[in-house]
Length: 223
Image (tube, rainbow, N blue to C red; front, side, top):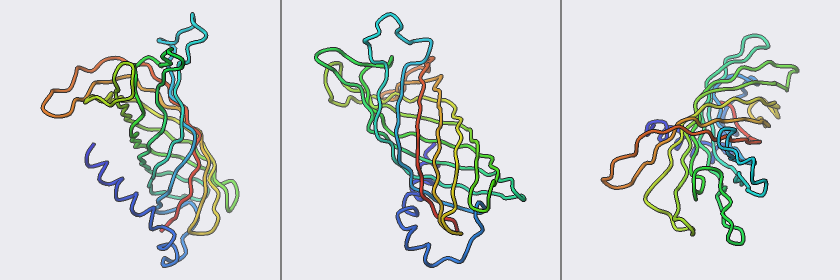
């Protein structure tokens, strides 16, 4: 996992430098080759069906916020078909809150969203010279910072959640090198553990049922 974070951190630096670099690279064919991208959008995590509180309709069982991050991938184009691996790291401003003394949680206690790592692949079809539609899927690992019971102070614990992601989107070639995209993706986290800082051992893995919905836009550069 640390190796993935190192690679994605390098991708962050590349995304920041992408506008300047795009002026120095030669033309690339749309929807093929290596690319980096900046991502932003809407993020909501909520209780899954097995822990959904259907009795108390006033219980807000979700947290939402602004998601942002970077991604990278490599596309192989065969006529109008495109396939390739992709990876990204994102963060979110979503967190649980107390509303007039009423704790509005979503099944995992008082937390705020930390980083989210995704590694997977996508398959696309070029429907016009500048437009591709695609589907995607893969592994996702999310962390939620655990806070104290009734306040916002971070503790020395993180909830580490493992799951899978599927999604679909459309990508538009602005030029041979520059593209924009819009996608929806759904993630489900089925397993989790509590990670402790310092010398404390991590907790035992346990079952989860968390749903995550995101609508993300991206702008990227191909090389």
